[in-house]
Length: 509
Image (cartoon, rainbow, N blue to C red; front, side, top):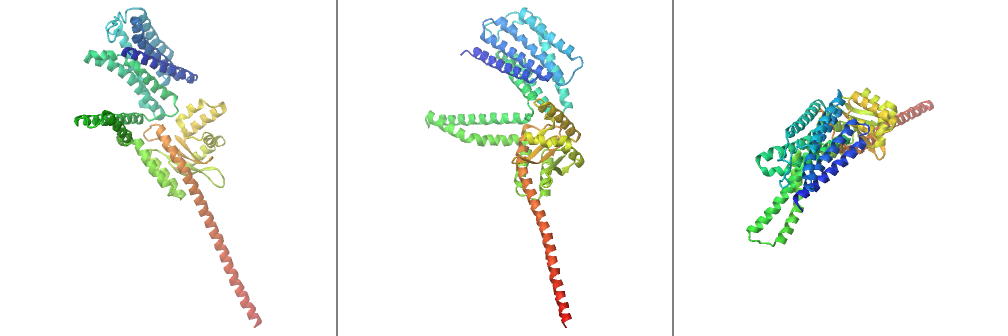
């Protein structure tokens, strides 16, 4: 197959993926304007990729080359999305109209006039690049201006944001950096170094799926993965695969140098066996290196919680256990506050067991609000509640529950509770671990929650054992007191009988 036709097919696949993102975002964005307008970004990105695919697959090169300028509509939709997301609502409709009007004018002139693309050279590796019209520089100024404004608003919002929103913005910035950076590099910088690179000018259309994908993931997901972790894991896989390729080529090279000591098919089988056996150790090695130097915070948390899990089974005293868990979480996650709440065995109510930097009265009020709604909701969903995720949970709830969730969010904010981790023994809610905000202001990520959920499963059993041990010790003390009282009474009775007998003997005398 011709390489250019292959590129066209790939671009059509990219267009289809972007279109799928668009419909999904429109469906989810009925109540949220930011999500809805992100759907338009995905839709125009699909159109942009489709027009580039048309350049390589269809005969009318001039029409499809001019149609690539429809890509400017992506930027007008993106700026409108940014206005809604950052809540820059002043003159919002007027500003959106201005950017859309500019994009529509450019698209119309590009499609119907030679002002942006005058002619094409069908035999050229990129047929439309040498036939630019007089208004082409103006169109590029529009593109650069839109990208600059997008990054300005995102960076401005990023530096004043915390938690989940800050992590969202990291994904937005990464997406637009990949999209615009790839376009600038392959359409602007590299062609200046060598004309050979001109054939890669459509890379921005390929990269649009990453741009739309990162942004959609950040806007739709309740809980995001830490970006450094994602990039680190990607690097680990790439390095592991490259190392395996090097091993295979090294074996082939050595076999060649030794005068083909082994037949080619034998050396291939041996190489495949070695690759299969060595991939896992190599992956673990690179993962350990990445953990120490790339996503150190996650690596530290993982190590700390793994050590804590071992200690849980060795501690049966309740006070020591609560102190061990609280201090470990406080240090590992770099928190401002932490607390443990357990169900009182006799009264069957949740009461604070040990709190660090939380107010006991405040937490007791939180537990009792709306007929113990927090405990009821934890029992219902059987998952952690992250304060910043409550607005996203509200999308899928009934009206009465929506009111209670809003109230819960307000109460958690007031008491600076960022995360509630339920403790379950079988189906019974036996308590919860509450965490405050991270000192860094960062959000709780997928990795954090997964590790903490694993810990709570073990902690719930440890607390249950500790409570049982505490109850046994309490009963033991009560029995000892009763026994002492009984023994004491028996001794007194014996002594009394002895005295009575002595008196009887004296009376006889």
